[in-house]
Image 1 (cartoon, helix red, strand yellow):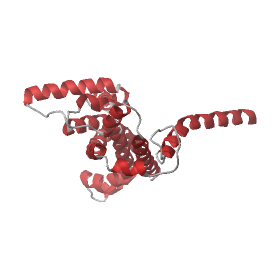
Image 2 (cartoon, rainbow, N blue to C red):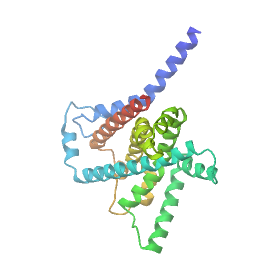
Image 3 (cartoon, rainbow, N blue to C red):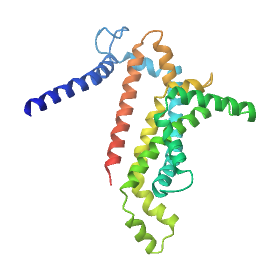
Image 4 (cartoon, rainbow, N blue to C red):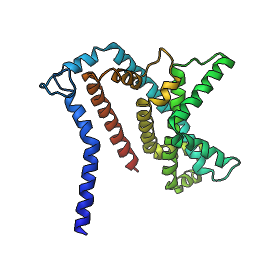
Length: 262
């Protein structure tokens, strides 16, 4: 038994090293003096200064942040409604179809999602004259993709929800809407916060689906990084990757902490 435990622990350590060491090397080489990303020439912050003076990179980052905030907020609201209905309404006409449509973006390949969104927006533009592909279409697509994750988080939280608290509030004279606002929603706040951070992270680093629906004047940060990496890796990409890893790690830690709260 001890030998098996050591073997499992060793394999786990090798697995985490395989995943994390390359990321750590990227973060270390973001402080490299050399222009070559594989040659260490000494500690320097010049590539950090160069990144913050790169107007194209900053513009793309600002666009991605705005899209991520808006899509995460909309996905949280819609995901709350979808998760609440799926949890509290066990049987209604079309429930199976509704539940399948809510969960579909989680299991559907992003290429298929991107093509379907492209056809939708092109058809809408031809029939209604808009919206043109750009900020709004990307936000709508990211919301559609992310709300499934929020709905799953909300539904899981409601599965072990103590409904006696809601019943006690209604026994004291609260209406169903007041009960939802004063009892249910505050208790769901950790799950909603976790879902918002997850949706924010998914939107911030989405590339495949965004490429189908982005216009010429709406280049997000992942698109800019992908186009620049094809021409050669710049040390500024290491700096950008370090910042993104720090943001994503912070968001995941906060999400995990919120999910564990009761």
